[in-house]
Amino acid sequence: MNGIIFGAGYVGCACIKEWPNKQDSLIATTTKEEKVAELRKLTPRVEVVKGSDRKKVAELIKEADFAIICAAPNHWNQYTETYLETAEGITQALSDRSRSFYLLYTSSTSVCGNHNGATIDESSPLLADSENGKILIATENCYLRAASPMVSICILRLGGIYGPGRKIIDRARRFSGKTMTGRDSPTNHSSLPLITKGIIWSVHHRLTGIYHLVEDAHPTKNELYGNLLETLKLPPPVWEQPHTGGAAVSNRKFFKTGFQ
Image (tube, rainbow, N blue to C red; front, side, top):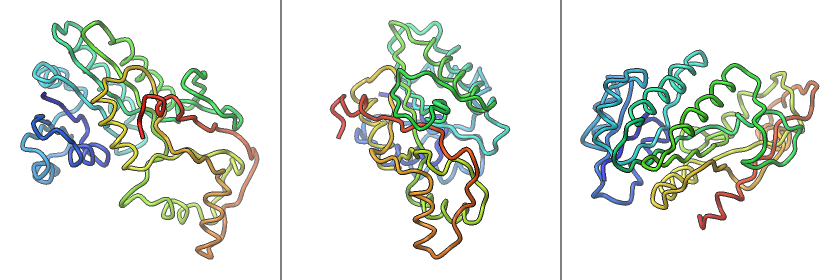
């Protein structure tokens, strides 16, 4: 099969490295020319393309059997271009698809918003109220509307991503002495190995719909970052009201697919 990794960054590169079927042809995309040489060490074909380049996106989609969209913005003000415009370009290219296509989009548990610390699942309302949160919700809806007899859609919502080069302990260091809210709010994290295995599992089993791909444990911000900083002998965050918020995002639905 021919596949596209839209946004071959931290997650996308890990997927290429771990892809089990070496007979599949994987195209990696990036928006940066300077990344091409490094990506070619992972897969022969690399394309420099922005998701908003609808002509180029359509050409790539036409020759592919599946796509994994894991693009991430370089800056907080690039959400519309990175997420929503990419979704609009890809779904437009799929609108007249005459053969089967599988699309997997990695979203974020941040779309869930504030449920006052309650445990929630995929059927819970999306309460994100920030501008970027609303863009992520609109992006999910854009992909979901593209589902058809020919096009299968899967959305994996990820928590805070950690792994090599992105250690939680380094995140804790950045919070030392900072003023923060949500002391008793649950955290949701996703390790790079969990994400990579989850994506490969989803594509292999053609999962459709929305799934939360997060760790089992949901320590509060204070339990996680406060304790890590205490271990490091660094000042803890300065906690302000409100102390509760967020949600503990359940991964039960995904693991019920047989994933281990």
